[in-house]
Length: 358
Image (cartoon, rainbow, N blue to C red; front, top):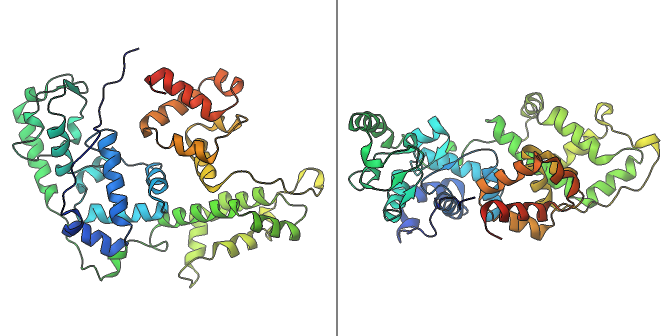
């Protein structure tokens, strides 16, 4: 098979005034010192993958958070502020759930001007002036026609719609509460993000599990915690219960300790025999990758050899769209999921076969 068309770019210019830009300063003031690192990481992913935009879904915060070393909630908070101040185009984010801007697109098309082919989606293009995509002479696979043959009348209609979105939305002073982004009380998604992070930490806390096992010798501690998590605490009823309290920050360890005392959450060991809890080999990073597989390719979790921390680190460096494509193909191939032992080796072998890279 032919080698895929190179879409992203290997470098992009970063203005020396990046950190003094008023938008960056507002985001950093509202969201803390990690803001700049997360924004640069987002830009790297945009330019590396599609080149001029990136789709925002539930998995992207995990990848960005893992690369930078922060929580997913922190990434989502910074995204909200970045869209609010106009760092990313608000109209494109609300209509298509993508992150892009006029500056990003202009830099991408300037850098790729000499390429013979690139792929673009006309619906994702912004009006960024004379040096924009209408002057790029590359052929476009997605649109099946050169950029310079786009109907002028349609382009003018699009320009008239987009121009209004270039005006940054009104921004309250940074000292107001909204500048700190929504908290868990205000937004169910923020609550779920904090709960998810706390749940991962609890399951990875060997001391916590062993301590609870002493008081509940016949319970499967992890399955009981998972039942409480899935059946109640990640539902709106659980969120409303937490909101009814006066606490500002949720004490999740205490919440999960109490959950084990509730009869409806208890999952007993087989035959009621008390056995030592098997040692948990999975790290927090492995748990998070397993959660990614549980959503996108659950059959890979049944394979005997799950990736180590080091192997997960290698997998996360694969371009995100390629990794998703590979794990889904493996998930749909009964031979691969039943005959192969190592998740990491199977992914890397298919990557080399399909994309021609080791």
